[in-house]
Length: 87
Image (tube, rainbow, N blue to C red; front, side):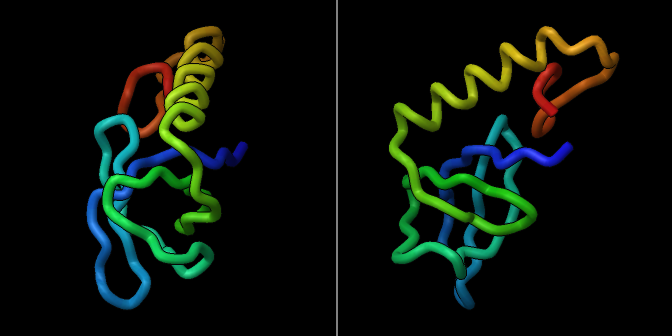
Protein backbone atom coordinates (compact mmCIF):
# COMPACT_ATOMS: atom_id res chain seq x y z
CA UNK A 1 0.00 0.00 0.00
CA UNK A 2 1.26 3.50 -0.83
CA UNK A 3 0.45 6.52 1.29
CA UNK A 4 0.99 10.22 0.79
CA UNK A 5 2.45 11.53 4.05
CA UNK A 6 2.51 15.11 5.36
CA UNK A 7 5.96 16.55 6.02
CA UNK A 8 7.44 19.90 6.92
CA UNK A 9 9.87 21.50 4.47
CA UNK A 10 13.18 21.85 6.29
CA UNK A 11 15.35 23.11 3.43
CA UNK A 12 14.90 24.24 -0.15
CA UNK A 13 17.76 22.99 -2.35
CA UNK A 14 18.55 24.02 -5.89
CA UNK A 15 17.04 22.26 -8.90
CA UNK A 16 13.54 22.07 -7.40
CA UNK A 17 14.56 19.70 -4.62
CA UNK A 18 13.54 20.09 -0.97
CA UNK A 19 14.31 18.33 2.29
CA UNK A 20 11.14 17.27 4.12
CA UNK A 21 10.86 15.91 7.67
CA UNK A 22 8.12 13.60 8.85
CA UNK A 23 8.20 11.50 12.00
CA UNK A 24 11.81 12.47 12.69
CA UNK A 25 13.00 11.24 9.30
CA UNK A 26 14.33 13.64 6.68
CA UNK A 27 14.08 12.90 2.96
CA UNK A 28 15.10 14.79 -0.15
CA UNK A 29 12.14 14.99 -2.55
CA UNK A 30 11.19 16.83 -5.72
CA UNK A 31 9.27 20.11 -5.42
CA UNK A 32 8.59 20.29 -9.17
CA UNK A 33 4.83 19.78 -8.67
CA UNK A 34 4.29 22.65 -6.22
CA UNK A 35 4.91 26.37 -6.53
CA UNK A 36 7.19 28.50 -4.38
CA UNK A 37 8.27 25.94 -1.76
CA UNK A 38 9.51 27.57 1.44
CA UNK A 39 11.11 26.19 4.59
CA UNK A 40 8.56 25.73 7.37
CA UNK A 41 5.64 24.97 5.06
CA UNK A 42 3.85 21.62 5.09
CA UNK A 43 3.44 19.42 2.02
CA UNK A 44 2.07 16.01 1.18
CA UNK A 45 4.81 13.68 -0.09
CA UNK A 46 4.12 10.71 -2.36
CA UNK A 47 6.60 8.63 -4.35
CA UNK A 48 9.42 11.12 -3.92
CA UNK A 49 7.39 14.20 -4.88
CA UNK A 50 5.80 16.97 -2.84
CA UNK A 51 2.37 16.90 -4.47
CA UNK A 52 0.42 19.53 -2.52
CA UNK A 53 0.85 22.19 0.17
CA UNK A 54 -1.34 22.08 3.26
CA UNK A 55 -1.68 24.05 6.46
CA UNK A 56 -0.07 22.91 9.71
CA UNK A 57 -3.35 22.05 11.42
CA UNK A 58 -4.39 19.74 8.60
CA UNK A 59 -0.91 18.16 8.45
CA UNK A 60 -0.83 17.43 12.18
CA UNK A 61 -4.38 16.04 12.16
CA UNK A 62 -3.49 13.74 9.25
CA UNK A 63 -0.36 12.50 11.04
CA UNK A 64 -2.43 11.87 14.19
CA UNK A 65 -4.96 9.82 12.21
CA UNK A 66 -2.20 7.82 10.52
CA UNK A 67 -0.72 7.03 13.97
CA UNK A 68 -4.13 5.87 15.20
CA UNK A 69 -4.56 3.63 12.16
CA UNK A 70 -1.06 2.20 12.57
CA UNK A 71 -1.67 1.52 16.27
CA UNK A 72 -4.60 -0.70 15.24
CA UNK A 73 -2.58 -2.57 12.63
CA UNK A 74 -2.30 -6.32 13.18
CA UNK A 75 1.06 -6.39 11.36
CA UNK A 76 4.03 -6.60 13.72
CA UNK A 77 6.74 -4.05 13.01
CA UNK A 78 4.39 -1.74 11.09
CA UNK A 79 6.15 1.65 11.09
CA UNK A 80 5.75 5.06 9.44
CA UNK A 81 8.84 7.13 8.76
CA UNK A 82 10.86 5.50 11.51
CA UNK A 83 8.24 5.80 14.25
CA UNK A 84 6.80 2.56 15.63
CA UNK A 85 3.24 2.13 14.41
CA UNK A 86 3.59 4.69 11.60
CA UNK A 87 4.89 3.04 8.43
